[in-house]
Image 1 (cartoon, rainbow, N blue to C red):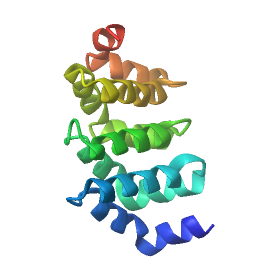
Image 2: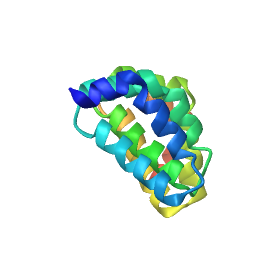
Image 3: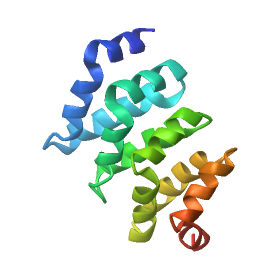
Image 4: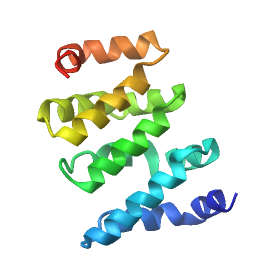
Length: 144
């Protein structure tokens, strides 16, 4: 409950600022905190999806090879797990294309995390599976 109160009080804005800080240590701590907040709480996940926004998380993927991208992938993976509204929001924000671009980039850690996000988006939804196939995901995923 205190985590949710912190999110609602604007802690996510502070965390986003920390995620783009010049200090690697500050960015890593912010990353760790954001991960902890989304890990096992549906309420926190909903608040983060609302406060941080799926669009913001998708935009964070542009920093390929960085901690910001890795954090976004971890958070998106968690937000997409068993949550159709979040899956749809990720798709509408251009998430499939971004995930496929990360797969094509062949940056090892990011490839696995992007594939995990796609797995959570595809699980239990034929429409989401079709969206991934239509975006050209099958060859990239088959190559893993």
